[in-house]
Amino acid sequence: MNRARVALGATFVATVLAAGTALAQAPPEMKQVLAGKKFVPPLRGEALIEFTPPVTRREGANVVTRVIVRNASLAPVPLLTFSETWFDKTGAIVVGNKASIKGLMQPGEVHTLTLTTPWKPAMSRNNFNFSHGNGTVKPQKVDKLADPNAPATKK
Image 1 (cartoon, one colour):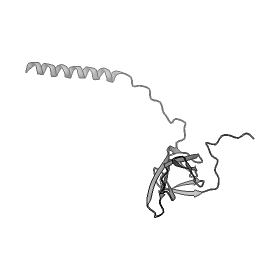
Image 2: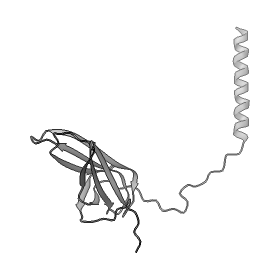
Image 3: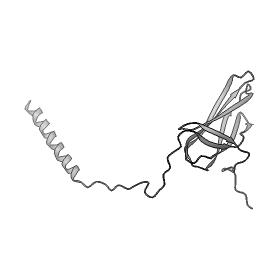
Image 4: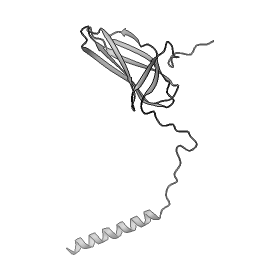
């Protein structure tokens, strides 16, 4: 019984001494991460997204849909998602897929979203929707946007 008390007392003394030396050390220097930078919080609610008409082509055993999108909102849009659903002739869902932009899409930023869906003979028509991490999307169809992945042309 005495050994247990001595061991407990020794543990207590060692803990107090270790805590005292740890508290006596100087704290590490902290740097401000956003010092001098402008931070705009992500958009909440409805986002305005401009998009070109989706281009859908069959490539081998897949159906590939590409759409170019631009953030027309005044704030960054978090986790923009493009969803596509394929239906058969009777209106039953055959298959679906989605693509998203990870992180924040800044105002005026342009991206190309590509969906690759396995081709099935029952595919007849498709439907697509946009959404984002903090709300809904008001899509606005435009005729043309500059493709950010297109090779640069010399003038």
